Amino acid sequence: MSNIFEDLESNEAMTHTIFKDKRPLDHRFLPDKLVHREEQIRQIAKYWVDVLNNVTPSNVTLYGKTGTGKTAASKFAREQLIDIANKKNVFVKVEYIRCTDYTTEYQVLAQLCNKLGRDVPNRGWTKGEVVNTFRDIFKTNAFGRKLHLIVILDEIDILLDKDGDGILYTLTRTDNVSVLCISNYLDFKNLIKSRVTSSLNDKEIVFPPYGADQLSDILSERAELSFCDGVLESDVIPLCSAMAAKEEGDARYALDLLKNAGELAFDEDSKKVESDHVKRAKERIEHNKVSEIISTLPLQQQRVLESILNLTKQDEEITSGKLYDAYKDISKKDAVTYRRIFDFINELEMLGIISTNTISRGRGKGRTNIIKLQCDEELLETTLYTI
Image 1 (tube, rainbow, N blue to C red):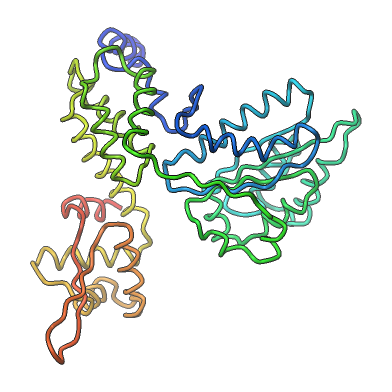
Image 2 (cartoon, rainbow, N blue to C red; image 1 turned 60 degrees about the vertical axis):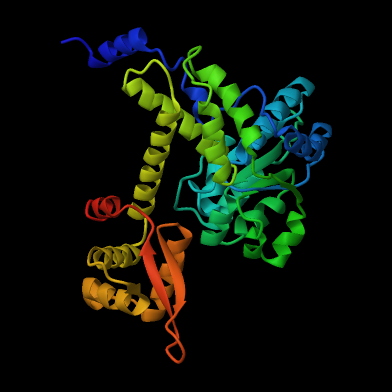
């Protein structure tokens, strides 16, 4: 039997009339230029340029919602800085840390040490040992070269929420080290104590959401790299852009729509990517998003959702009281308090899985919260019972 992957690859090459390269449609792809983020990149460079004169640069914080180009802009500036530093023989390292992968100060420092050539285990050392090993790296080496390090901490709020602000205190109190923090939330500094805020003393750069026209420019540039000539119908990119503009100007969502639309067209042996492919791509993405959210919820919230699903199937008007009774039946002796259920309801509403509406029952009868599902019942049931 021939190798199945070779067969598929050659067959795909012969029939590949949609894509010429999918990589540019991945939000992690770094193009040669970042359209509509030139000003933000210039600001980052303005704060980092001091390092070329062997001066520790300013700390920087990038704010903006998901898909507004924060990560891409910081990585783009990193590539440009490393390029010029090599030409000027300045010893600069710019290390990217995604705080969803490294969620404690120990893990971040260990990862930085390993990237900079010092072996540190993922666990087992004291915090003091890791900090001392990290700081020892910055002593002038035998060749008299002084290392400058810029640490990009992406989604910093996740680390701060889980482990506190120790990482920022350590980094900002280490010679020749500066940080660039990336956050989706303007209020993330509420997680930082005043002593750390003082030593951080950062410069702030805001990334506004993309408009539909800007998203169209981004997609057009990526489409030219990704799709074969003439396969995109003229209304595909405007439709993807308009849909993503409604999702708070999220470029990642726009790229996902375009890529999924292309994949649907390819799977159907279509010679063109059409607006119908985009609409169905939207349904597919939302389906996957809801499934992922539900499957990663804590057990108690899943039980609350199961209770809402059961009451919905019974065509019941769902009040918080009815919901709590149904939840207790499912949870038995492991139920949380009635007050805690309100927290779960608020969190599920923020995720867009349910909605609540407060109605008045009339004079003297008070007000009642009515809860409704905002996702497909069949999808919810399938996801809950396959976890």
